[in-house]
Length: 359
Image (tube, rainbow, N blue to C red; front, side):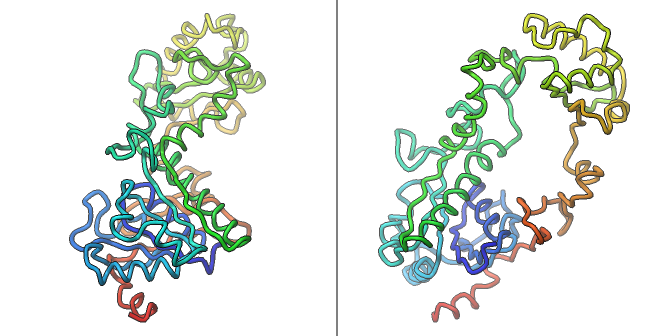
């Protein structure tokens, strides 16, 4: 879909490489500028997020290598960087300089706190950003610490995906007008914006500021229950017809304890009763009970178990290779089979890239 577009990425952690990986999976030619020396221990020598990219190692403290980086940006349609505000400017690679040389350039900036504001120069990580934005607040049961799957809500959801959307919008503008733009993708912005759907429930009385009192974080029909084997099963039968199916599957259609689906005063007792029911049998039993129904119930699977799930396996959602497990590219496009490319060794295409630049 993006064949012919050139992107230069400056090595970072987390959301910026993820965003560049998505663009590469969509067909863009992505050159990642790796730092000299050993790789960051979190990413490893062959970072899976570098799949589909080409790699060159440049020392951004060396004037000669800075000139190569500038040449890459001059030829690129988009640039992605994830440094703290001001770092690229100090290197002579800031948006003002690069867009003066290449007006069509879409300059994508990925940070946690944003390019401005009182915390813009401070360090932080996924959990800090979503804690500050409000996105972490509803993640967990009443009386338990708020908790989300690591990196998903902040780095990926509120960060990388918003950077991709911003870069793609900038590329559309550049194609129409010949002028690029600067994309300020901040995780605090994106993760707060992701709450728009949830916040839309407030005027209808379905969202409260207190945890455990809202339509999706308080009911007995919207939570995860423990099974006898130590596994977990998810339940979220929001609509009345799905709730009715849920009760039929459990043999509870005539049980007066569960007749009132939306009575908030009964939610705690209903939750306690369901917890006792699910705790009696293993996950395999409950998976069989709800299989093929519209009860909106599904087992909580580890990634390796998810790869073996019949639905996930039929769609090829997970792929194995290089000794690991990695998700297939998404979204999908008609007539195209998603394929995950192998990440390059650091600097593997350095000589070829220099030759293409005439350096």
